Image (cartoon, rainbow, N blue to C red; front, side, top):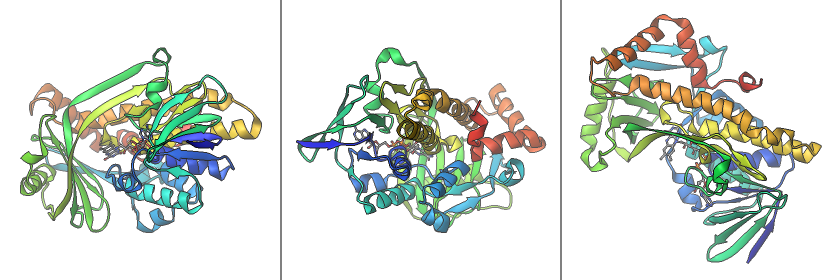
Length: 397
Ligand SMILES: Cc1cc2nc3c(=O)[nH]c(=O)nc-3n(C[C@H](O)[C@H](O)[C@H](O)COP(=O)(O)OP(=O)(O)OC[C@H]3O[C@@H](n4cnc5c(N)ncnc54)[C@H](O)[C@@H]3O)c2cc1C
């Protein structure tokens, strides 16, 4: 039996769990992380790649930004396209200098994991948590298994940073929260390809054949997406067909798309989900454990890290000032940003995906919105400030 004792027991070594552990460590608070998957699995997962200004600032604050600064790409705008007409929303000019950074989630995870293990801190891979006990007392515990051996972590607090399918949300009493959910009648076919990006900034495109997105990972790797039906299958999409479809949907006069070898291909459904209570007793949820947004706004990982900021600050107040005030307000504080991000992600999804027939009433509304972005600086600024991430002060009152 493995018996561990710590201040904060963290379940999950994704962005939420790793950021929380580092943040607490900076303030002298101990934690132990349990991760059910192997290190190579966690570090190999292709997911988000867009860091808001806040996330970049937090990585710098934690002293973990060296590789991001060297290898990431700052973007000062985004390109939006509708029926082949392309406009640009400049970020810095509209938001007082805020920008996004393109740096893959798996690179962030590698940096945080390496730094954590390099300091001899405790992180058990292949250690699924099975049960969280006594959350309504001041000595909760996490029961887990590690390579065939049972284990227990006794702690002051449990942070469930364990993603959408995790144990944390299932442990909250059902009467303690309401659930909100929306699914969409389309999915994203995403590819990674060894090819120099054909753009220096992301391109979001509405096309009568469906949405497409040209994103980037590095000077030699491109990330692109296509709207497909929920019932579609990856076998229906040979590489040539993907490139042809991308070229059509992203196309605009005087621009062409470079293709290259595809080395990763997957279909991901789109979903909005959240619960309106992220805590109970000594159990706190952060990140995808409590909310999922469609990836159109690039918010998933950034939201997880924003939750962590509030949770870390609450825990620091507890240990430094013996005050529970901030922790008690954790959900209330975090939810303001979560709802904003839900709305923005939904807005971007509705604006660029094809739902109804080309030329329908719905299409005309989408087009009117797009045209307005091109003519109104205020409307463009609303998109820019949400896209780069609103400063934490915005949600303070
Ligand atoms: C397939 C996919 C593609 C995505 N693409 C994008 C994208 O293109 N753009 C974007 O902005 N966002 C994207 N996201 C969202 C983004 O990656 C997430 O919002 C982000 O990873 C949330 O971080 P998290 O730490 O809350 O959760 P996760 O990253 O899910 O981490 C949770 C961790 O907890 C572990 N865990 C779960 N249960 C247990 C247990 N019982 N015991 C121990 N460990 C456990 C899991 O193995 C996992 O490592 C994508 C998500 C997915 C799933």
